[in-house]
Image 1: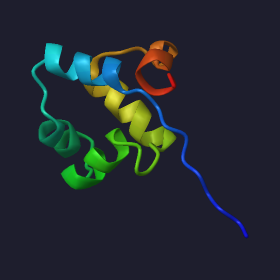
Image 2: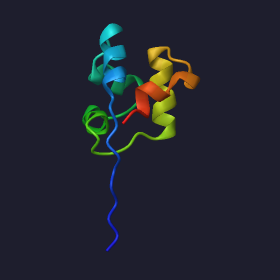
Image 3: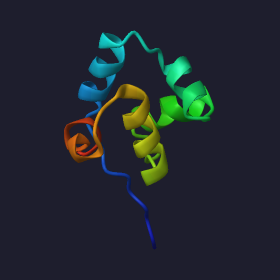
Image 4: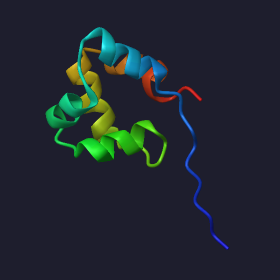
Amino acid sequence: MNETTIKAYDYSELLGRMRAQKITQEELARQIHLNPSTLNQKLNNKSEFSQTEIRSILKVLGVPIENAVPYFFTT
C-alpha cells in the first residue's frame, strides 16, 4: 500500500511576517493568484507549497529567497 504523507511544517514565522506587514491570508492569496482556501490548507499542512508559490510569497513579503528557510522549511 502506497501512502503519501505530508511533512508538517511550522509556518509561525511566515504568519508573523504577514501580521507585521498587515497582510491577511486573503490578501496574500489574491496577490499570488491563489484561492484563499487553498492558501489556508497549505498553511495548515493539508498540502504543500510549490516552489513558485514560495517565491511569490517571499516577493510579496519582501524576503530574499536565500532567507526562505525559517518561513517555509522549519519543522
